[in-house]
Length: 228
Image (cartoon, rainbow, N blue to C red; front, side, top):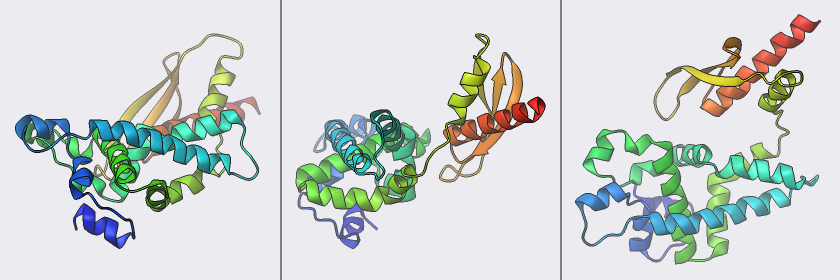
C-alpha cells in the first residue's frame, strides 16, 4: 500500500502527490539522487508548528482543565521524538521513507529521529496541500489513542524519587539501560535506577522512558517497605 492509498482509505484529502512524497525524502537519499526531488526538512519545520497547535488545542479542552504546567508537560510528551516515532511505526509510515543506501544499511528506517522528522514533515505537507480541518482529521486518526492516554493522571515516579533522594542531601540519580530485546517495532527495555552508584530499582517497558518510570516506581516501593 502506498502513502496515497493510506490517505484515501483514511478519508484524508490530498492534491499534490509530489509534495506529499517529499515528506518521506531523507537528506541521505538526496545525496545519492540530487536531481528532481527535495528533502523533507522544510516540511518538518511546518509540521512541528502544526503539531504544537494541535496538541495544545486538545490539551486545553480537557475537563477538568489542566494547569499551564500540566499542559506543557503533557504536550512535550505527546510531540517528543520518541512519541512521534512510536506513532510513525504504529501506522507503518516509516515503510514509505526514501533513504540513502548507507542510512538504510545503518538501520535508519527504524531510528526515532528519522521517523519523528518524517512524521512532522508528513503533517506539514498535508497541511500545506489542503487545510487545517483536513490535517486535524488526519491527526485525530493517528494520535487519538495517545491523546486519550494523556487524559489519564500520570504518577511522576521519577520526580517523586528525585525529591525523596535529594530531601536531605545532594546525592545523584542515574538511569542505566541494562538490556534491550525484541524487534525494532516492539522493543523491551530494562533499566536500573542508581543512587550514588547503588541500584535502587529496576523496571521494564516498551520505551526507555517507560522503563525508567517503572524503575523509579520499583525504587519507591522498596524505600517505602524499608521505612515501614
